[in-house]
Length: 193
Image (tube, rainbow, N blue to C red; front, side):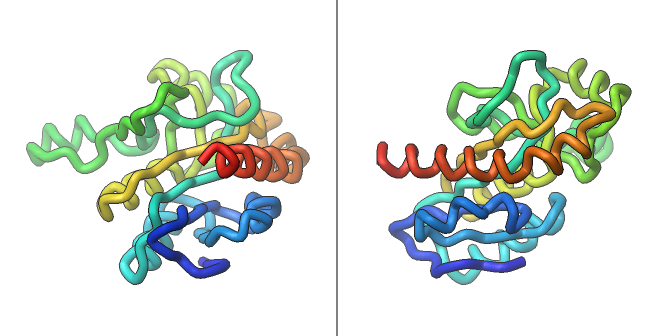
């Protein structure tokens, strides 16, 4: 975990998993939290900084695999869920929900977050059947943690691959371009604010 810049109540906090994803975000002079990969790293890092200082909102930016034909570019997520957590089964056992889907209040694709990289047709097809459009490894944890602290949250994902057998190679090859497009989205968003 690494925090660049200082968090303040009047500015958003940008959250990414990897330094490479933040390459073009530092130009904004906003605070950037680099959490590390996966839901546990993302939740722990974000909770740690939010316990000390609150931003105006949280913006999670990063790469994602696309499960839907024709879905590409920069996507603002409409709903996020955990693709590797069976909330309904846990509810059946305990009578409580511990991981329901989170509606982010905008029209956009459904993101499924989980702690494994989706890089096979079998995993991909199973997720498509559940209505998931994109996959990543941190979005749900960031959204859940921000909501626990009462903060608005936006998830912005740049599609890096097709979540199939070529996904790992495609992700590595596209990471730099994806980071540049995330920076462009942020600059456009800040001009509109």
